[in-house]
Image 1 (tube, one colour):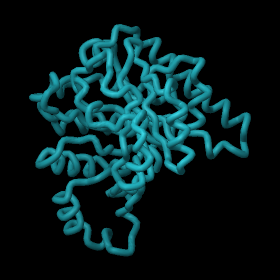
Image 2 (cartoon, rainbow, N blue to C red; image 1 turned 30 degrees about the vertical axis):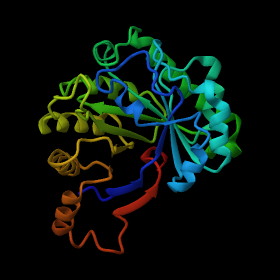
Image 3 (cartoon, rainbow, N blue to C red; image 1 turned 90 degrees about the vertical axis):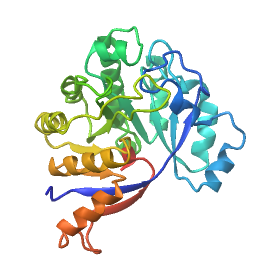
Amino acid sequence: MNKNFKLIYTDPVLSVSTTKDYCELNCKHCNKKYLKSMYDIDDERLIETLKVKKKSTVLISGGSLKDGSVPFYKQMKNIEKIKNNGYLLNVHTGFLPTQHFHYLTFFDSISIDIVGDQIILKEVYNLDVDISNLKDNILKIDEFLNNAKSKNPLLSDKIPKIVPHITIGILNGMDSYEEKAIDFISKLNIDKVVFNFLIPTKGTFYAKAKNVEIKRLSEIINYAKSTLPGKKIYIGCMRPFGKSRVELDFACFDLSVDAIVNPSKDFVVQIKKLYQGDFSKDDNFIESKEGCCSLI
């Protein structure tokens, strides 16, 4: 067992859309379904909702434009209002025009989905842009943040880092060029990478997608460990539920990842039985955290 392994329970964040349910891409794994479950940033009751639900963290997200950007920068006034009320902010940027880079230092965490091949952009995201342009944009974001830290050493802890996310099996549950995505991530100044899994969602094009095979999962995680030495590997909260979640949790545990976020109950019960000495009440294997794992 990875001696630094953690089971992390997080308080679900409040997801907020900066575009309501508008999206120009209609990605096959989402088809606006996730957008419709988000809160509208223009809702005058949003701050009150945060207080009532006792949330500490807000995910700033939204639908994408045809260039792959999430135009959160058009809603900075409302975003500032949330921040000024004491909430932590994690943002989905997508492609970000350089003139808006300066907004990034306002956030506590920057989550960017990384894809490995042009085929994923075309087949999953319906995105007609060159993947090299997207990768170059992410490298420039990383460079901007690194320079900001260098120029403001006393405030460096306040400047966020990119937290790259890879969705395993995003191409309808099939091989999704994850190794290529990992190769790109190796060029970034990061502390950890978060692996999510495609959730077959009713009303999307991938509603009947099969779960990733454990053999394929092993290939991906082992490749990440060898390619990203010293970087933490987190299994994010976005995974199928039920029996599939239990199986994935066990497989990831056996692969010695650094953390599993919001583990399945059955997995935790069985792990505690197997490792009674390690999972005592006084140890630090189980943690409860407020907000998104990107902020941990």
